[in-house]
Length: 189
Image 1: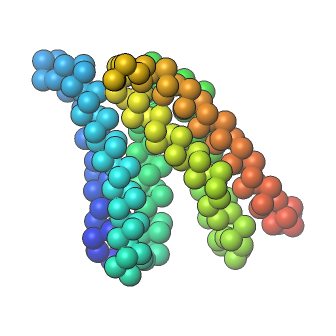
Image 2 (image 1 turned 90 degrees about the vertical axis):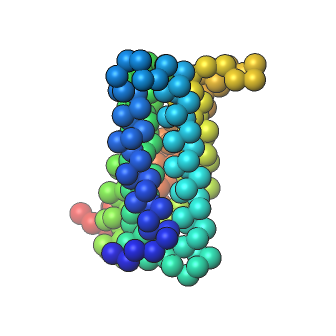
């Protein structure tokens, strides 16, 4: 496991997950509900920005590694799953949305691993629809974590619409990846 700056940033995102969740379970009186929401929102946004930075640094510094390519999406999926669990627990997101998004991530991760083992990883490379799905959920989740109006905008309403859009894009992208992999799946019988 090479320890370079991009990989350290990725590890930092993973370490941040229990801190992010823990903010919501601090003893009463330590932070107001609004302060908890602000801290959690800031941590999630920092993780999302760090995700972009570590990928950019890895390419810019020539420090891309197989381990980093493995760990980076794992860190992203863990942070999104943790945020969705918190949002469901605090009744800011539907359990159906969380199941769709987390279920798709598990399914496509397993599919990508299997396709890589049989030498067909290119069939399930990241697509534009997958990027749109990620963008929708990375905008929706902070809005739902914040959970209050901001600048006259109803963050919960907008976040709810966006997270449902992300769930629909999630299903669409899963169908896309499964269609792309179908020839390999069908021939594996």
